[in-house]
Image 1: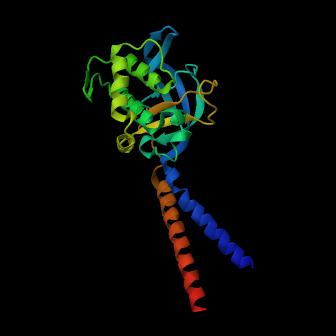
Image 2: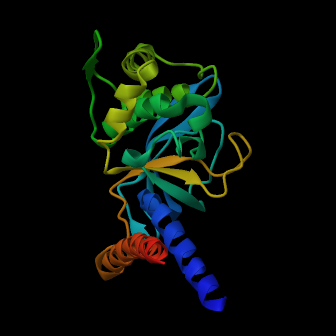
Image 3: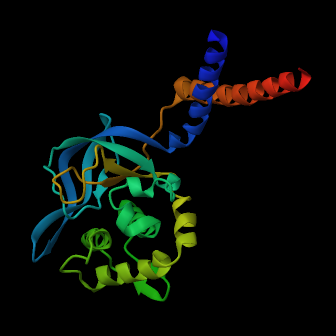
Length: 249
């Protein structure tokens, strides 16, 4: 009886390990702002720091982070934990775990990802879907991001920012297939959602985006993959052997 229970426990553990493999597209990280930002945005609510914020992630220098959360504020040198989702791993199963997934869905995250990529790349023009927008500033990109994630939008968008929002809504707003396809290409972009997540406007840390976040490298990652593969194979092999034994009996 003990041996049978042990075998069943091993099988259950192996199966759960196999099912857990998809989470390799995410990890918990420590985000620390180091006081700098690249631009500001002003409207009737006042002047907000915006653009690319200087930061470290897990104690290492980073390309900076970009805030997509207009309702929460953070001090210039704040530190918090976040669950990092690789943009290419976002799907219908995990999008609700992000800060705005339940309200803007994959389509909204595809729109924000476009703007984040533009900001990191210092892109100043956008041409698609009948729109040709030039002379775009980082302040306009930031305000367009916040308009997408804020229910009802925000006040004070200028024509460039407003046109960006409309152009991206045309590209992805009603096209889930296009949004999913675009997100899958973004292997270098990450969404950092506060952990724990308590809700927009609750005073929790902001959700931010970054580039080039690395998963665990070297031997540890390789051993993880080898053990995972062995565990999955072992589960299937044992199940098949057990079935064969039962038939023979």
